[in-house]
Image 1 (cartoon, rainbow, N blue to C red):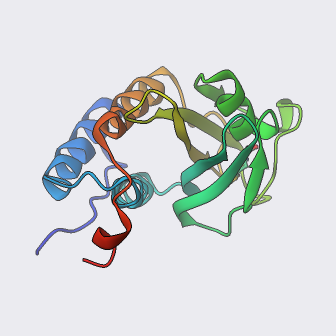
Image 2: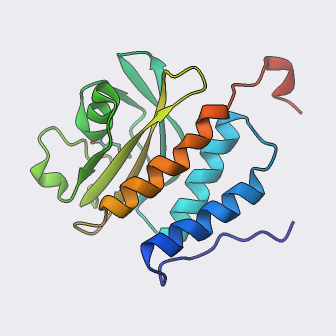
Image 3: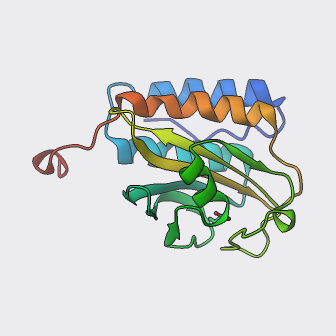
Length: 172
Ligand code: SME
């Protein structure tokens, strides 16, 4: 496979996301395994935009606890309670949270002290319940805006058809 991760930083955001989504559709054709989808989205977004951290926190105790999932970047915190930090707020309220300056967000969790701005998008699974949140962190202020929110919310609709594979399929 001659696929490479594209650097889309030179493009306007809408075009950058469109290109990444086209590649995502190609790479994930026929793949519905939710972990494979999380890993591939993390990889393409992270290398496409060069963020500090890009990845997922999975709901492991509904309404209570998020656990780190597939991600790229510096070491992430392993667990986040619902209602704590930006991720926990997005999970508890099931809404996208855009933070232009993390120092102005009460309770922000600094897994990496270089983080300056952040966006967290809730991920809904096939059964309509909250599956995870998608978290992007930048080392610059004000990186994320409405364009990111719309594109990332569209991107995570792929999880509407994602499934947790049965145990016997996981080794294939
Ligand atoms: N900043 C996040 C924590 C996760 S990491 O930055 C990878 C938060 O406040 O929820």
